[in-house]
Length: 347
Image (cartoon, rainbow, N blue to C red; front, side, top):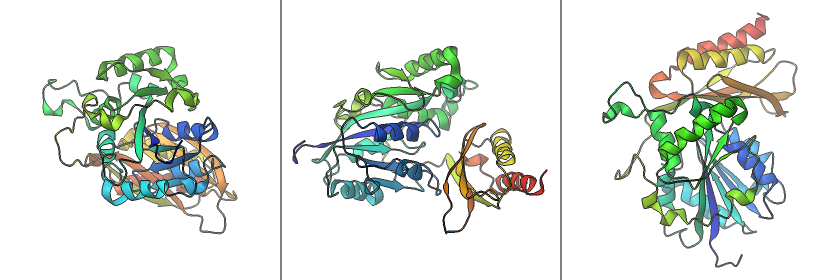
């Protein structure tokens, strides 16, 4: 690549917990001969995805090439955060061959595409492609379907979930179906049919497991997506600004626990009783030098010990994301504390 050539950028989008970070971790360890830089954006204030990506840093994507923006969606903070961050990546001592952007699960891709026309960067980078990751099990279960209890032409027909999901699909150059093992063959087929019905144009819909895919399939698409906005319709076309008022997050700190079981049960309760969409963070377990990483999408909860706490404080903090009307900080705290207290008392 010459110094005058535009650096290709791949935007990886998809709803909360779809598997975006897992996909990017695979690309970082299998870059296809490219020197990568990564920008990861999180909706909540507790950064988890950035740490997971930094764990994969190597000579092809050193830690200095991994930048995290938390507490908001970059589609809303273009001037203040996105443009300066991109300028920082473009100014790295060793020019990256390819930049990968992981949007937050609530981000709308189209405003981000429009940002590539900003004078500071438009002559230096191009959107090689937009990759939308979709949770096959969640799609098959109808979690992103519009509300069919009202007439299709009513303003309430689209739910906040369906609007975000449809906007993410509409911007895609390729759709990757994740968690196929959880959906099963029938679920995968149902998800493909549901997604194809929402796409504004025919696109490849590919099934992936644990983010594993040949990088040649999604890098090097040469889509120049920033110049193809008309083919990528959005529910928010024509709006000067957009907000994420439908969703909110809260960070809850809890005391040290004796094991992960009751915390997992508490997180399941958050989904069942308070409609939590996403929970993630780290928990201190008594007698364990490693942090317990907690990640949940609805009632699916995964925990693992990821790294030592080190010399700093062993602070357990979980970020909970839900639709704004379902965020009740006191109720969320009570459920999580009940889990911590159950483990602490051995209940």
